[in-house]
Length: 265
Ligand code: SF4
Ligand code: SF4
Image (tube, rainbow, N blue to C red; front, side, top):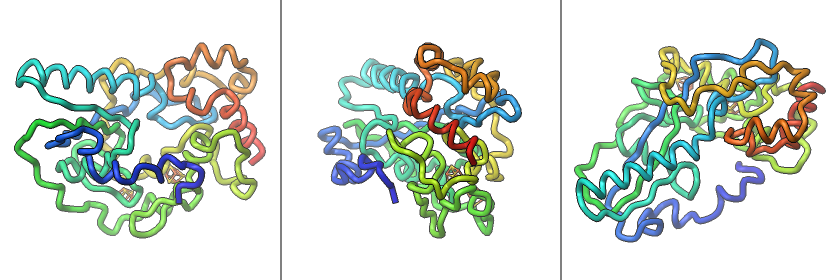
């Protein structure tokens, strides 16, 4: 159900065998990084997923993974490893569950009892043997169905199956150079870039605390721009303002397409 996201289909062999990514791999270290913002966008502004308020997490976390590997090398000796953050065929959520960090909720997110789900996952695969954690054994979704009931496009199916090609994040971010299916009109609820509904309604996120990483401090324009200002923005201003933002993934043309789509809805 991945629509045009061909990359999800590719390299299945690498996804299930980390030794193909790091020869001689013995351990998978899973890391979480909170991105929950302290501030919110203007009321009525085109909505942006909270993970994209600050700087691009790929850039921020990649350098932290490098630092961690350097530290391991300095303190332990020569360790071969590679860090990943959404950049290669790695089953981050499964590894996180197997690392004991939490369970995969009905909304498809990794949920931690302590931290909810507003965090990024990163993975360091290395050839250092470690004392392994036990997989997280329980599932604390229980009889809750809030994410399923509130998903604006009915993209969350039973058995933790997400119809990726029906999700607002797919349409507004991953669907490249194409028009959004007319049938979806009226369902986006003003989401212009991504969607947080299935996380916002999750009871495990009630106690989320703001992130303390400076790089994830919201870009002021994300908090302050009105619909009119988004509409009137030039490509040059977009590029300059969002140079280090996840918004660049969908490009200026994608933002314009999304804006038009939610306004027609
Ligand atoms: S991100 Fe939004 S559209 Fe996608 S599954 Fe969650 S609630 Fe549904
Ligand atoms: S909203 Fe409820 S069912 Fe959905 S992930 Fe959270 S706890 Fe699980």
